[in-house]
Image (cartoon, rainbow, N blue to C red):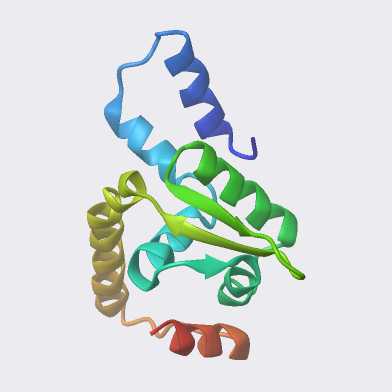
Length: 136
């Protein structure tokens, strides 16, 4: 596990020593890229691993792999493997992951509004801008 919050929540749930629903919900998003991954899978549909790497140019292979595994373990996404001359792996959002989309969408809308209030112009690298336009 890469995330301390998630590990702590899972341990306490396993031991029956847990009663904070807000913290449980937050633990599903904990991890630097999980919310972004979930948002794109929920909005755009399935992605292959390398497509996610291009979509998130600052993520490392190891971090993306770990966060996808945790999201799969938490049943937010599914991993589909297609055998053939070249193995094809795709990731899709599950019904449980989809149930978090209203929260993700509200967080996105809140962030957009707050950025406008602060009169901040987001700065993107060339790769991020290309990925952002491709994701639309």
